[in-house]
Image (cartoon, rainbow, N blue to C red; front, side, top):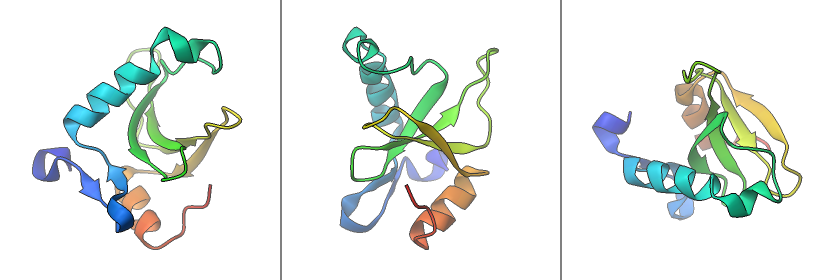
Length: 102
């Protein structure tokens, strides 16, 4: 999807899927030492989109550095990580249909 669109915007200009540059910059930002004080490590997540209320969507990364297809949401208030979709295509479809509840 990134090769064809370099990101997907939703209603209210929400970053359903960020551009490649934003994915790189946001993931670097969230791995900063400042966040280590308040949250579990983000080394096992690759953030790629936003909810509009501070929560972020991510792919889980295995110990070998491979991404799984599943999509999780990270809750910025309680640091929980919850499964929301089996793939990015379902994530986009369900998001646009209002089926993803966080």
